[in-house]
Amino acid sequence: MKSKTLLFGFICLILVVMSACGSKTGSTSKDTNSKSDKTLVLAAYGGSYEKKMKETVIPKFEKEFGVKVQYITGSSVDTVSKLQAQKANPQIDVAFIDDGPQAQAKSFGLLAPLDEKIVTNLANVYDIAKDKDHIGVGFGIITTGLAYNKKLFEENKWEPITSWNDLADPKFKGKLVLPSISNTYGIHMLVMAAKANGGSETNIEPGFEKLKEMAKNAVTFDKTADVSNYFLQGQTVASAWGSSRVFTLKESGFPIEFVIPKEGAPALMSTVSVVKNAPHEELAQKFVNYVLSEEVQSEFAKSLFDGPVNKNVKLEGDILEKIIYGQEQVSKLVKIDWESVNQKRAEWTERANKEIEVAH
Image (tube, rainbow, N blue to C red):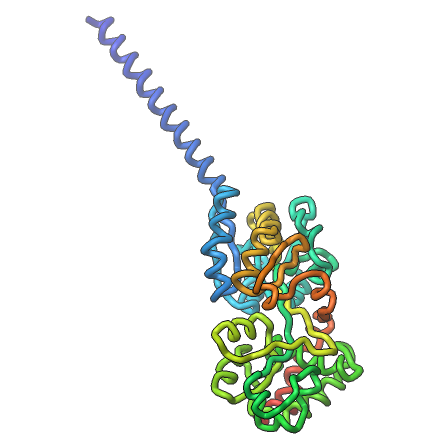
């Protein structure tokens, strides 16, 4: 009887040990899986960009790489502010920023160089979209040019505008809404007015002189970067505006036309960058490569009117009339020297507010 009791106790002890070991093994396995479960954090644009990213781009990336993607919505300025606040302990892996603010983020040391061994699609990207240090890359090209109401021009028997200087034509007095220098379109207009009159980013005075002439025709200076309502309500017959926004309004049936001025039009680049010391840097590099792929580039072109930066993207049909596409068109664009602009931007903004925009 005693031996049976000992045997029973011994069996129970073995079962308890086995159970404990099994539990420990299971627990270790679960922890390991938990640690390998990565979530890539993106800071990116809202609106149509967010919709397209969440509908198609992100789900395909999550499936291909077996990860989750968290999307933080915000403007370029908002994103740069977040990156600055988190500099000591970054929480964001990938940042989508317009080229102007992106140049600022680079100068603040907030972004990491792209690894060309991982971002292999970088080799297929137009030079205009590349950073000289490979810190971030443009993933979509639009341009700031001139937009005008074709119907009103025809009624007034006006010739289509062809030059940045045309915005200073006295016949437009009281008929223009122009972009404020506080947004990218306004900066582009100032720089191109300078270039059209012998100046540049480092010699901006000719731009200010011409902007003062343009201001005599302006009803107001728009700070929202969206002059569509001014066109719709007949408050402006022309303006400096982005190609993608013009074609979006044109798709609604409004008689608006887009013009690349004879002096050239600046590229307005949406960029994607890996954050310096990102929690998942390698995965972030893979995401940038994914965004530069032919498949995703085609998605952005068809849905958002972003000209593809990948030279190998093949498109055809009506979309070609609404985007910057191909080497010939890309080569005509002006690449803004944002390093020089950002050094003077606060000064220019204050000057424009006091000397030009305050009266409106």
